Image (cartoon, rainbow, N blue to C red; front, side, top):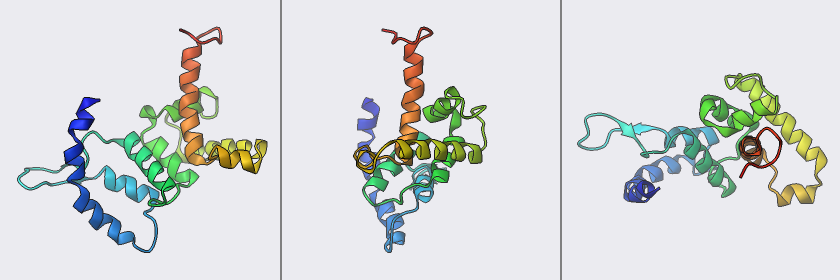
Length: 169
């Protein structure tokens, strides 16, 4: 945890690159996957012999969460179901949401195709939308980001419940 704090200066040093990148989208928001690709990109720094990650220790999950946060702030486009499915499928073994889909019996393996993941995410979102009124949906910010996040927590809950279906201390 402390290492992230020690990297703060390095992250702030990327600001000129961010300004240049973001200026390309002055007429609108940055597309969700375009932003993630930029965050995960590699750059050659002055004096370096080879390209290094733009942001040290920022991989698929952190770049997704950052894009999700910035979509809520209107900087990045809201993700489509296919955007989230693609992100889940591309980092499948690292995303708790893919294990949540698997544990719920909604996909057959962590290597399920992106189209199958997208279809199941849509099924969940449709089911939730049909069960909650508009006020409740707005209060909980019911969207595809929340569905992905809930699937991650679902698999964690199952793991903590143990075989008898009761929480394990």
